Length: 121
Image 1 (cartoon, one colour):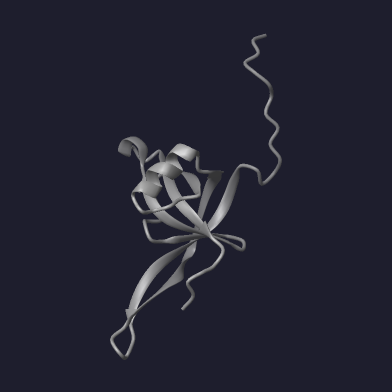
Image 2 (tube, one colour; image 1 turned 90 degrees about the vertical axis):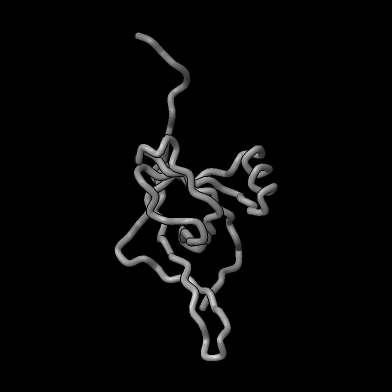
């Protein structure tokens, strides 16, 4: 028997989480001002792994004026885009960037900033 390290113990809810996708939309008010809001995408759940962004990623995104706090990794092609919001319970993650490594449609990485406040209509 070959052993390759210590066993992993995962409890339910520790790996994949179900996020609600909210698309950013902009409307013009009667006075001509632009107002932004978010609307949920019906019947769409993003099942992904949530992780803290490592210090190198944080630094790289901060230099681009897009601070991030987390990475969210999903199987398959992107379901959300830059500017959209992912909701996990009472937590809000604003997508700063999307990366599809190798452009093969196997994985998607979302770079997101968690904020305690929300932009409501």
